[in-house]
Amino acid sequence: MERTAFDLVIVGGGAAGLRAAIAAAELDPDLTIALVSKVYPMRSHTVSAEGGTAAVLRDYDSFDLHAQDTIKGSDFLADQDAVEYFVAHCPQEIIRLEHWGCPWSRDEDGRVSQRAFGGMSVKRTVYAADKVGFHILHTLFQTSMKYEQIHRFDESFVTSLILDGGACTGVVAMNLRTGTMAAIQGKATILATGGCGRVYEFTTNGFIKTGDGMALAYRAGVPLKDMEMVQFHPTCLPGTGILITEAARGEGGVLVNKEGERYMQRYLPGKMELGPRDILSRAMIQEIKAGRAFEGPYGPYLGLDLRHLGEKRINERIPMVRELAEKYMGLDPVHELIPVRPGQHYIMGGVSTGLKGETALPGLYAVGETACVSINGANRLGSNSLSECLVFGAACGLAAAEFAKKRPSYPRGATAREALRKEEARVFDGLLGRERGKETVAGIRVEMQQLMERDVGIFREESALADACGMLAKLRDRFAAVGLADKDRVFNTELTAVLELDFMLDVAATIAHSARDRHESRGAHSRTDFPQRDDANFLKHTLAFRTDGAPRIDYLPVKITKWQPAERKY
Image (tube, rainbow, N blue to C red; front, side, top):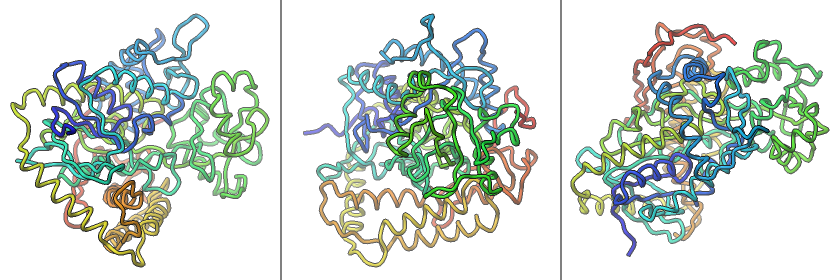
């Protein structure tokens, strides 16, 4: 019989979840750890990261400079105590991965290579060609397999948290292969399910990134922080959402319009293509509106020019960029421009946590893109996210393990059995029992995605945001009539899609309402009706709490240590 009670339950098998599991396993060999993942861990979205991971490794760099770049990039919405902790712990994580076998790219003198990335003052981004997420995930996964106390539940979809006496005591998960549900009890639970990019129509995110962890915490009464801060990456392939890594610009690639002009000289002459992502994405939209974009089968786009780099450099430093362009666009970047346009990429917001991933609910932790600690504020700098998964994954794993060790006994089995019974009734009797009618999961999902793209995108204004809030409420009502054609329980992808859409509708509402109530422009949140940053009224985090109706919006002060807010100039 499969074990169903553990010291620690980790939901998500990507970089943050695996790093947390390893940290906990290293702390105490007697701890039992459940790693519950919706997909096989090597299919986690970490594998898609391309460009690199940030750390101070050279004499020309410093912790203060990394912190300053991160805080400035965040448009001063980052919590500075978290940033200081983060930058101080990045180097040891890079070295640890090196010892575990991660094949970092090297300079000719044998030192680990570092490249330029947007918004960074110096070359700080460590890389493994342009497949760094793949190599980091491989390294973490193979390292996790050394620890027998880590029990994997692959292809198990967590649908709810178990709550007992005002604390989180585990999860209820559906085994996608068998169509059965189980209560997996834990003295401590970590949510590490990644982001929520699928609430948007055009995104770099994989199909699994549906805000599961965010919605689970939100439904348990934990607030979601800074959800209006959604990052759009400037260089995505039109029609596919596939990311062309920032490393392409870090290696010297340039952005051009249809007139062959390097248009960033108009918007950011000091940094050009190596400016922060929010500024580059807005510049692209302005070029499109000015009629200086190319026209293609998927609408207007701009050009990323790598031709001057030469075939040798492209093949050595960014081989996957060439491979993606050839496979998905039918062109060779050695000789042709790569068509690019902005697409949703990352969310700076997430489950509100403290420095070690702890939430307001005892026993519940969150880490990685699921969480908002907050080091990213209103705009994340490229290459900080993988480092965040490593640094805070380790810290969260240790904190949750210590919490579990202090809990004298396992949670009560009766509570878990009742939670399982309720969830089986909701999913199998309720959702699966509905007959298919005029409302379909695909129909509502597409409407939600198009609505978010149109009204809660790169540029925002009051009436569109208010419309989005109202329409999302109507979509939530209509969701109650969604039926399923497939009644089988085994690998029922339609049922999984319904459960994911349920989560996404919650998350989308927090994004829209948080955006509507922030009457300023800051980082990725750009309001055409409030074009200036307003520190007097909005130098604070947004907190979205779940209610029976619309989210309740509250605020929390930003923690400032030594970098006073200033105009964000590059």
